[in-house]
Length: 213
Length: 64
Image (cartoon, rainbow over all chains, first blue to last red; front, side, top):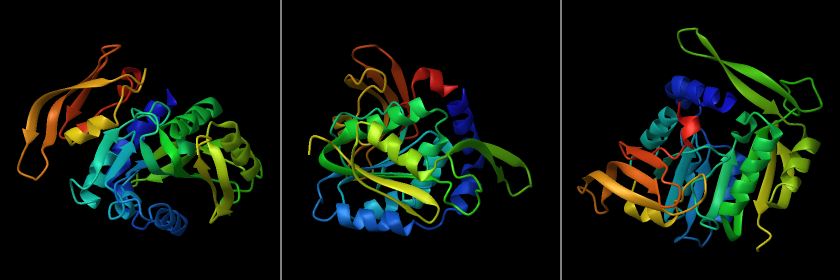
C-alpha cells in the first residue's frame, strides 16, 4: 500500500529532510497572520506538519497547536524544532483524522495532500479536514503543481520524486502533481467550502471554510 | 501529550470517544504530560499506543 511506503520513506529521510526545510513559506505566513488574529483561546492544526516550520508560526497565536503527520520520525523533528511541549504531536493518516468534528479553528495542510495515492483518498482527506473545522474556521491547503518550472506537463499526473540522502542513497516519494484546474475541481468537490483558490511559486493553494459558517 | 488533548481526540475509524489509560506521566512541568499509555475506542475497542508522548492514531492496517 502506497501510503505505508510514504510513511516509511519519511521515517527514513526525516532528519535530513528536516534540515533542508528551514523556512516557512510566505503564503502560509500571511494566512496564519490573518486567520489567527484575536483567537488566543483557539486550536490550530498543522496537517502533514513535516519538521514543524509552519506549526512554530502558529504557537504564539493560539492556545493549542496540533502537529499531525504520518511519520513518527518526522514528528520527532517537529518536536525538536518547536521546543518540546509547546505543540501536541499526533501520528495520523490524513484521510482518517482522529479529531472531533468542529474542533479546529485554523488549519494548514501544506505540501502533503499530493502524497496521497488516489483521487478518492485525496478527496476523503479534504472531507476530513472540512469535518474537523469549526464553523467559521479556515484551512489553507497547498499542493505541488504543473505550474512549477520543473514540470513540462500541463495536466496533472502521478510520479515519484527521488530524495537523495547525504550518503548518496536515493529514496523515492510518490507525488500527484496537480494542474490548477484539477486542483480547483477537487477542492470544490470536497466537503470544504472554497473561499479562495490561487497559484503561487509553483504550488496550488485553496482556502477552505465550512458551509456551517 | 497533555490530558486536555482528550477534548478533541476521537477514534480515527468510527469517530467515537477514546478512553485514556495512562502508564507513565511526567509532572515536572506546570501541566502533566502523558508519556506512555494507550487510547482505547469505547465503541470498537481498537487500541492506539502512546509512546514517548506521541499517540499513534494510525488505523491498525496503516501501522506496519
